[in-house]
Length: 434
Image (tube, rainbow, N blue to C red; front, side, top):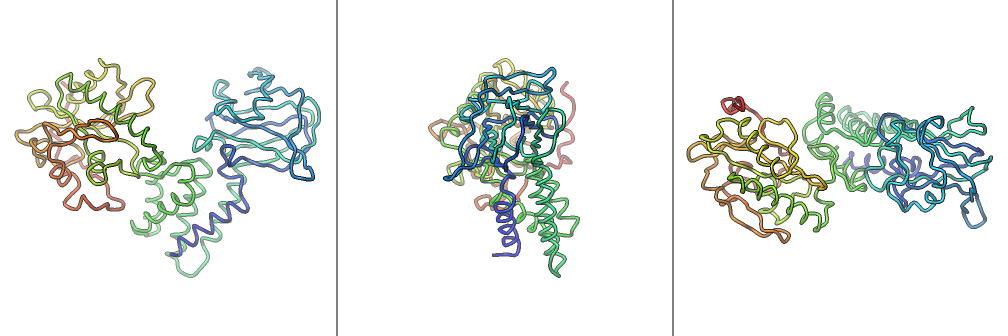
């Protein structure tokens, strides 16, 4: 194992041994807190995001473990107890934890939940479950306070405080040793872990910038992301990608992929009905040709739509025509990117990136991509191929298309490869929508 792999494993063991509360979520990984004596228990969190829990349960110690404490009369307040929402009668439902969105502060705007147990209760363990999976990260900074009279409160557990302790421990261990580069590499990794448990967010751009400040290479950066994913992020069915933390395709079921392709085909059908030539493009084609699947670390599919110069002389005009055509078919079109839009539909959780290109003589030009190098005849009219049970259009000569977009070695995955978004060659196509 490399020194970073050893440090990553040490960080994982430290977290599971001494900080097991960090990163809690559903019933299989609940937040378990030691006991206290209180009539009132208040849950809160920093920030504006709602606090949502699916299970709240008190236990007393018994000879064979822990036994649930019966609370015959428990009042629950969302937000401020003076003018908030009262959820009397919901305590029994919280014991089971079967409803994934049972108790949320979304409507109150104040991420506070207060339990009035009706009388002073001595308990030996408190169990709380958040939403299953990555959505639980909104509750990771939870603060638990207890009170006997509802006036004087004492902190019983501070999630952010525990993360700070974990951060300090990791940073102290990261800096050990005589090799400055090794220490810097571990330090960048330690800060990325702390960021994940503090906010549920890791911005790969920030990680790369910090690595660069320490004089670390791109390979160092990639190893940080790799170990972070493998030991800390993947268990939540998420992955740090170039787009941030996403539920990448490696965690999708075949039925989910089928639903996504169905959505893509609906977009393609709507564009085709408007007389716009289109096909799957970019990573969607790369994954399907290279492995007959979606690219595991990707999280969305791309569609390319072509406009002749006589119809649209610029990307803004092409985007305007595209947006109007899709809006007529009840699609939601969002984003303000130079040459593509996000397309979704009400009631559908998927969205697609739809890129516009300009046909210039025998060539088509897309951004990102080379200017006047992709032959129109290598893409349109597209071929139809069956993928996860759906007939989908792909470039007519996918090999030639992929070579122009990804280079001659497109068949071999290249870690850290990124498109070039330089606009120097496209300035004349970035004019107005008029």
